[in-house]
Image (cartoon, rainbow, N blue to C red; front, side):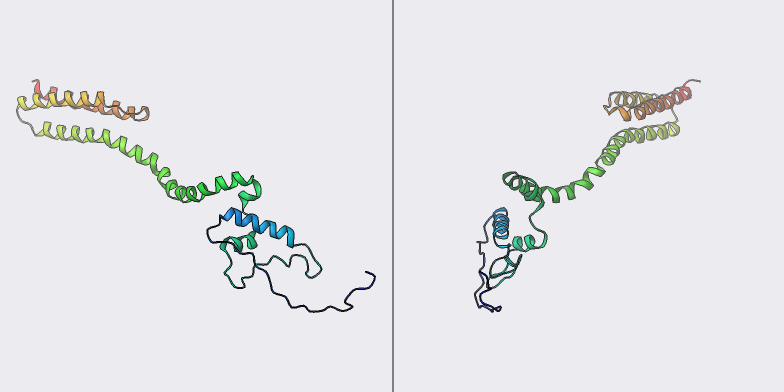
Length: 193
């Protein structure tokens, strides 16, 4: 074609085509269809310029949210970087895992502090009981009631000895047993003349 035909640009009237899919078509397949349409029709042709088709225009039907996303940012990250089957396989759990991580992260962050509080609380309950026994010792007038206190202190010491705690909390147990021994010595000294 030595001379352009027609010699001048001519405005043609034609209907636009739409790529229509059902609502329940998997998003990954929608992305593949859009990618294929882009590869085939984005090249310049006799009747259109480069990258003029396909275009994100909704003529009669609304534009799919996945198509809108495709025209904004292109293919999703997983579909670009991984094989199709692997990207589809990983995409579904990611949609569930991300919100789950948002909820679980604060819980997991505070779990060690909560665990520490629970273990210390077990030991401090015995300390509270020791304090009550010590208060009773100062209020007890007779030596018989103080002998009963010594028996209760022995039972408390036995419970402290058999309390199973993780290694980081063992110094608290040893400290509790030392304090029980100190209160027992005070009780024994107050009994003996």
